Image (cartoon, rainbow, N blue to C red; front, side, top):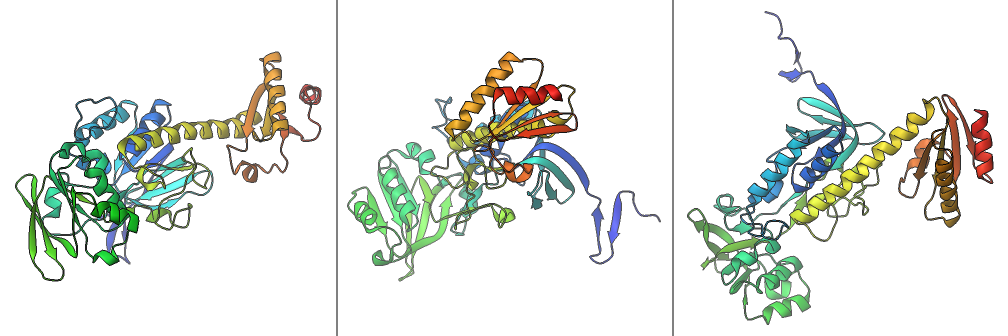
Length: 424
């Protein structure tokens, strides 16, 4: 019997491998949380062919939030799942494509980036990394039953709904203590479970003293979570004294776990710049150290990780990605393939003398409108452009028509540019 069409047998591994299909996109977003969805909305609305690859659920960790009360525009608040459903529907409205699979490998160097999943390969000129991360969990019995149903990882999100209630905080570092102090502004009682003695607590002494002197905060030393109890909602955290093995049942409304965070950045190690903890480093435009590669949301090294800041990251990345694509298209394609000459100024916007040249080009564009195409490329914003273009000096004006081009780098004037353009 013949082999099924489209399949090939790998005799070494003994399994059936499908031939990978190759698809091209303008933008591929890895991760479908609030940051990735926001980036998709902006890219799709800009008529960029956009793909979001998400391994699990659309919406990421935000889906597990019972109540989000600080996202603008929803005065009554809403669940994380409901909000993420709206993000998803809006992305679909702008023709964003979705693939629900995991990314196996990436090659993000060069103009064309490649992304491999189990079944297919995707080629793109822009990659937006929105792979997020995940909070560390205790691993205690029944924990998975109450994720999003009392167990939470965000005090800013859930502090208000715990007003006048009793809550438990798990953790021993600065973050756990800071969040306990924040929660104490809302909750009636905060039980902070710390798995070490007071003299071994891994936080600043100043923070510890403030917490010890807060009448709303009670610290239980040398304790860890044994298990969680409740019906459909968390009702009790059962702690275990690590010295005596005594079980301590704590009635509570919520349990906040602040024992660390794991960014999902393994795929990009050795490719993009990262912090020691594995967060991707970007500038304020969400650009990484690789041209055409952006990082947004919780994967990025930043101060605040919230749905609203993730959405902002996504918007910024897509706007700059669109400019990056337009700039490259204009420089690489249009200036060499038009019947009338094009004039391109390559300059550095932080150099005052070069800004004067920009004004000259703008004046020429108004004066000679219709006779030439005009382009400007700011290397301060387009870092890495010089290395790829082969241009050694800035400022440079390139006058081109079809396959002929002339470069002017010294004593640039309007008269010289015009004289060169008229000869082509």
